[in-house]
Every structure is written in C-alpha cells, then in structure tokens.
Length: 157
Image 1 (cartoon, rainbow, N blue to C red):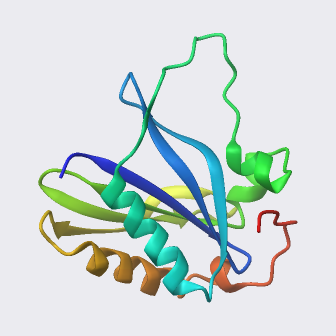
Image 2: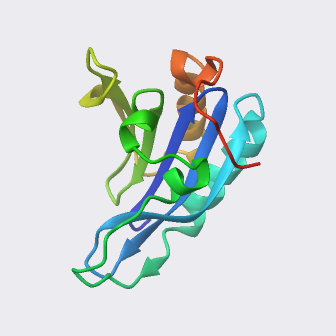
C-alpha cells in the first residue's frame, strides 16, 4: 500500500469527512467535497473511510505562493474562525504507510485546543483496514465532543 491519509472530525453528534488530496509537493490538503454523517450512522461513515483508504488520495496541483488557503470545512459550516471549530471537535487521522497504519486522535489543552499529546496506535501494514476503522469508531464514540449536543451551527447534510 502506498501512503494514504484520511482525516475525520467528530463534533456535536456529527462526523465530518473532508476529501484529503496530496499536492504535487507531497503536502496533504483538505479539499471538497466535505461529507457529513450523524455519529450513530456508524456503518455509513465507516464504509466511506474504508473507501477512501482503498482509493487513495487524489493528487492536485500545488497552488501558487500568493494564493491564500481556505478551509472547505469552515466554508461548509459557514464559520469564520478555525479556533471555534477546533475547540469543540476531535480530529482523527488514519495514515496508511508502507510499514504500518497509524491511527491518531488529537489531545486537548486546558483551553480546548488540539495538542500533539493525543492517542496514537500503530497497526501492521497488512492489518485489515476494517480493524483500524473499528478501532477509530470505538475511540470516536468515547469522545465527549463527538456525542455532545452541538453548539456550532453544523451545516452539511
């Protein structure tokens, strides 16, 4: 398996899955479309994560330096500040590499911002993707931010 990265955000009883692309410079970037699922729709969002891991990341052109990057998530949620989103959400990253598949869950500091002190688990590269995704789902439903009533106006559908 070549390198593949999937990001999943959990916030306010929603699972948010942006498309993750790799630009020509090798940097992973979030692009549209952004998909929204209700947390209890576990089979639906797990199937989408699986599909993205199997399909891999599309390659996009590297933007010019003078282009200001936007956020497809903030646009989909109609939010102005990433900080508003970050404080209420949890980021899950699955990174499939040639030697292993890692699952990372962000930690939080005292102000609710993401930290590097989250949970990380590595699986053998030949581990079934379903096992990795099941572990992510189990971790997600234990996160208070994933199952709390939403305080952000969550768009999508």
